[in-house]
Length: 504
Image (cartoon, rainbow, N blue to C red; front, top):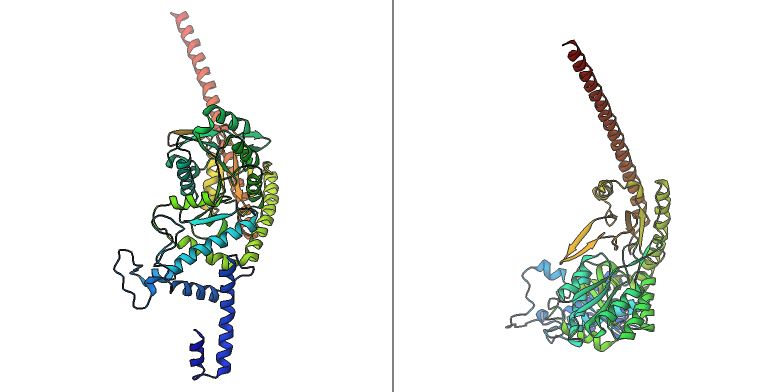
């Protein structure tokens, strides 16, 4: 209500009560004003009533919510279901215009304000997380893979002769298909084994650039967050190589925002060399539904080019989800989640190491991977790898999600490219292993239950393997007995035949 409405209310209710209510509302409005003025994530969390008030204020600024609005166009924000309208807080128009996802919509001032504000708040959080010199970012209603594709398509116009993308291997389908979908030929760089870790082969990267010609290479496509025993790429060195040969550099930072180490690598890469854009998932880093990503970088003009490459309007749902989440957490709440994740990584590492020793396995040494861990499964190895895959099935049926059991020797064909040892990021990693990750939102209870169930599954797998060995041994003994009896019978028949011949 405005001042005149409050004054009118004083004629019906005691002015003292009205003033008290007015001051209460003013505290909500003060938070909203500071958010709009600074464009940063508030330090402390907002309560739900403030967030809902803010979203309602935005919604009434969109034309579909104007009283007496008369829409005669093909896109007027009409929604048949009231449930759907409430789910989106009546912010129906989406974001952007046909030529630019970041453009302001004349019919949707509230949704446009939501879009601009979300991008500003997310940029602030990326800086808090460690990439302090990032200058621009925007939320897109696509997951990481398609967002990477959008970056590659934007680079196509800047480097029309280029047909190759240099890609240090990581066995994850969407980042590989993002290059294929954009129409480029991935140049797969195999990783090198250093101890237990799989690391970037910098010599092969530079050798391939020289062989193919820098002008024929669209970009280097590197990775931060990944499954152990692969570790984040050597971003600083790759950035320096990109600067040396004047080649763009796109970083797949899928779930790296939650890791200070991954964010530090990006910051250092941009400081020492070249990083044109880095892409991260909304759901993995901010605990919102799947369907959105953040494209960020250090050059405003290049980020603007990417946003203009997006065709048509876009859904506002990912922007709305992440803004609500960050306002609900506040900067302090998000920092606490990052700290808790680090603590749980240490705890998970300790518990997994103890369990591995109990089963005569080992926790692989991957100190450069700050999120994922890997435990060897050498003692489960058998011909055909059935015990390894059985362990994965047993964990899944016991409601353990996210753990990956990686048997060696499997291959996968993706768009005509054959990957030997697929999922292990290497043609011939030395052992089978199991992955587990400490991602944002994980709790001590999650770790404790996982360790307990994994322990039970390992015991069951080894018991079944022992029984199979005993059964195989018994079968072999039986075969040997039959062979001996057969030989004895043959010798008896031979003697009998010789005796019969002498008698005749």
